[in-house]
Length: 136
Image 1 (cartoon, one colour):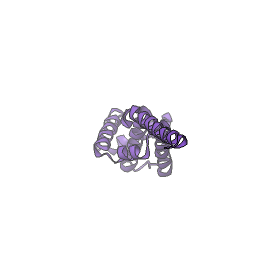
Image 2 (tube, rainbow, N blue to C red):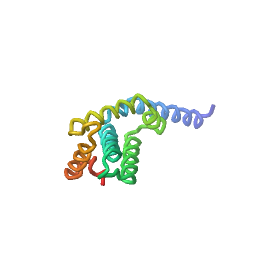
Image 3 (cartoon, helix red, strand yellow):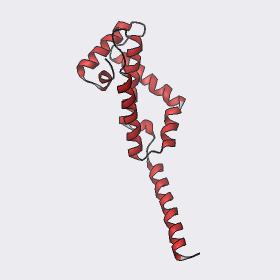
Image 4 (spheres, rainbow, N blue to C red):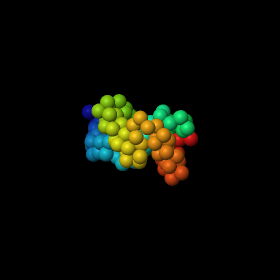
């Protein structure tokens, strides 16, 4: 093995080690407040848009917002595989949906009384919250 080849191999191994170490050091995506809260806000806005005849979810705004959360995860160092695994994880999805339903109840939304969902949506729009930004 020549010196340049050894140096190139060592650099490659070091690069993989650093990348693997950086990735391993990242907390679970569910523990990132910006991503978790963003997904919960999106779920609440989507549910309000589905159940309230007076308000609609802003689909393009919602898709753009979700893409910004994905980009944020990439900027933090998460790989596409890690982001995809998080998105596809049914247990995570169920956990976030349960949290979104609980928050919607805390805000005054009553399952089956869709007028309360409308009231929550209007209040969120008036407050200028992320939920409100995803509704029209």
